[in-house]
Length: 294
Image 1 (cartoon, rainbow, N blue to C red):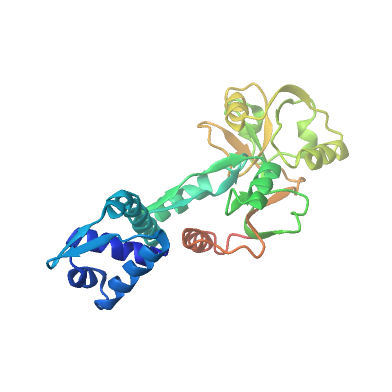
Image 2: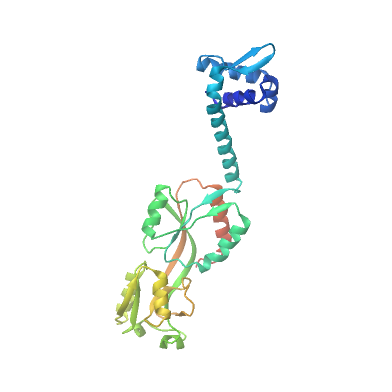
């Protein structure tokens, strides 16, 4: 059975007139007649009976009518949803965001995108770089915002968005807060709050060792908000990407001799076709970060 024939059947059921059914379907009169005849041939019995100029359903027609009507209605709903999706009036977009990427640089972008595309349901998925890469390759995500020191998987394309330095975060009462900058050797003996989600921990540790600085670990956590809150409360200091601070009162100071930086990129699967909502999101992102990559 073809969907077109089922639509003819539903139209004749509604009108009980083949001519009006043709008008309802926007076709010439022979089309519903041929379509119904084809359905009857497939089902093995008449669906309509004509008596004294009147058309009515047969017993078989009454039996299949609700089922065929349901299929036609579901098909119409699917077409409507697809149309809304393509016109970005009812679409879903699930970009992944690495857990250590701060929201500050994306707030204006997301606010503007929401205002321009109110029909796009935006759901941000927070995870580690490894997990985001897996979700991308498995097709569970269309794109992700990731930064990592090593090369991306062969099937992934990374488009740089911006670069950011690692700074030292501390409380306003910490001696570092009274200085314009610090040096790596100044970290020697400092109570340190370890960000377990930091992808450049090894590189930072190497720089500290080169400077002869030894840290005193005060606490560690995968939770960025916990580490920042502890630093703001004066429990210790930590290295933090310059655009990742979200805790009020946190003081950030640059490090003169630690040129460790990270590159935040938009990552997609090479060769995979982008949805209309992703195309719009990427265009907005490119406008927002134009000139930010260093």
